[in-house]
Image 1 (cartoon, chains in turn purple, green):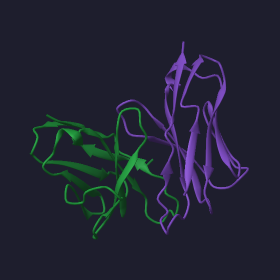
Image 2 (spheres, rainbow over the protein chains, first blue to last red; image 1 turned 60 degrees about the vertical axis):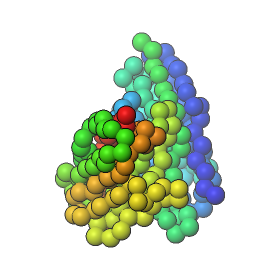
Image 3 (tube, rainbow over the protein chains, first blue to last red; image 1 turned 135 degrees about the horizontal axis):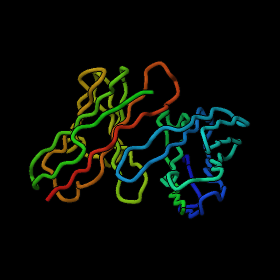
Length: 112
Length: 117
């Protein structure tokens, strides 16, 4: 069975303290790995899609990387407005379906 | 970027009544939409896949007679919670994908908070 595991469950950082969030997966035939940001009481906001190992994508203070087993979301010099839950999802042909499987998310709090 | 809206953003209803939630893709045609529910501090739970012009595909354990899904056009899918009970109170979120992309980059609506009293 496909699994997507995110760690840590929760992370508290001081403003400016860089860190990384992890998304590990066990799927066959990965088609895409997606990162989303979700603020409380709102729907997830699309951030990145990674398609193959070695790929990297950046957006402001965020950088997503992908290996054959995991993805990292690096946050450089975070600001309080980066506080949110970050979700990753994996798309692979499981049982004939390509519907992405979501992890439980990492709740990030950045203190000023 | 692709924009998805939901209406209403929150609703309170009495036990036994039905509630309809709308999901619209505003700037693209969505042949496929997804419906999720999310409990506090938990991840998204896929309820069903909605395809335009055909019956929805429900995930295991989701009562299709209770959660009625209709995808009547390329920009609108609706979720009707029938005979709602307090345990149906949750945050319901829809998402849509642009056709022909091949990769399921989902664009999510803002969510609907349902409270059943």
